[in-house]
Length: 413
Image (cartoon, rainbow, N blue to C red; front, side, top):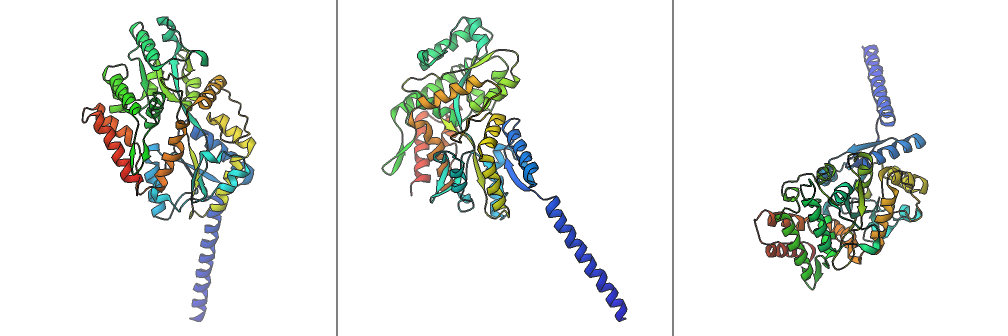
């Protein structure tokens, strides 16, 4: 009987050792550091290629997980609550529930000359350095302009006012098969650039409440009229019709979007000539800065490896390759990016940024940071209120009042 027990004990121990051995092998051969990215064919592909390069150089596996843009915040919220966050994520926004869950990346960023003023700092910790810089801009269909005999700005010496621009695109629309005069992304980011160009200071704190200046209402009224008159397709804002597809179809003379479109347009628009032109303005030139942030999470089990990867990614040669692949405006100070597609367009965007009013950086820094430190999440409040206005559900005055009250309630204790 003792021999039988010994025999089975040996078998049990052997099975445990084999299972343990398989577990160890599985963790080294199969498990990978997860990197959450809102995928697209250009920027997501660039990060995937760089992650593969890192694996080739170091042997550390990185699994790039494609998460739909609209689901990213919710997905990360749930993972953080479950204490199972990914190692890394590329994000454009934040949630108050993430506070305390992000690693301090100040040392890594400073070491690699990253423009830390473009990142998110909380309690003296750089919890989200910038990965890239984007800027709002204007694209035109050159063929439609030439068919209508309408000229467009070719330098900073002859930039349109908004009234001049709208007159020009109206002429193009009337003298070609263009369906609309212009299209603008359904985005608060793009709308704010439009407001700034009309003299708006955005929505800001004054004493114990949020308010705005009169130019904001004037610009928003013009935006409503552009939609109601058919100069812009209302369906983009009210029914989420794809503005990029509309522009690429060749039926819209002008498209207010941004630098992230450059590589796509240069690669895929074959049926007409397009150009980036300087944006019109009434009061002062302004783009609106944006972009993605790089975050690493506490509790992933890969904290040190995540920092090592970020350090590698920001190193000058690697970052220049990333920026070239993704069509990024760089955030590493000494980066010299060689763009294979439409390099002259990136030069124009850099000129727009340099000439822009100070308010162009408000959304990127102050408003995005508030998503992390505020009492609750508040995102796209102006865009949502304007959609209700365009749908005839409320007046413009009511929309502005709602924005001011919601920002006051969320951001002022």
